[in-house]
Image (cartoon, one colour):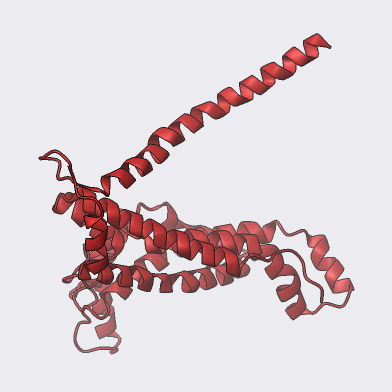
Length: 296
């Protein structure tokens, strides 16, 4: 009895030891920077001079800064990519969730952009979008336009050009998640529903969609966070230009911190962006809180 109790205590302590290591890394690399960032928001700091306490001045400046308003508008506009990329990815998953000859090659081709570094993809699309790039060449060749379209220098369309890079890269990633969800649905559910007289519409709306809801929720939240915090593709393709036309919050935070050395103000902007992401995520969770099978 005593030996069994000792073994149990040893297992518990072993489990705590394994959990302690990642917990330590989490505290050091996640929670400590978050707390330090929060404290930095109340200081004026440029690396060269000692930090100077300014109280709420950085926050007041953020709420009256037109560049922040513009960056927030662009970041929220970037959310337009979320429903599009989720819908297309889901439809693609439905298509490749079939036992057709060569379907594995089709899946691999769509997943290839996911394993390509984003910076490489972004630079490739920057070249494609140039006024003398391959896209304008093709459009002129097929007669769709006579003059080059200024994908990267027209303030009205530059943000949508960058959004397309995110769309092109993300389809394969979310498609594979949806495909994993579809393949995890037991065939017995489908067969039982068919025996009960369910048609294709009932199978999709009452069986498939409810069981896929956790995957839809996960992908929606991940893509929402990615859209609001987008950085790499915008920085690589336009660096926020022309002017501030494609400047998102991620780009503005980077420029504020590393171009202008205003680390305290950049900390406030990062807090503002985090608050926006948290709010949108909570709204997303509320709208998709239901789950499970439904009667038909």
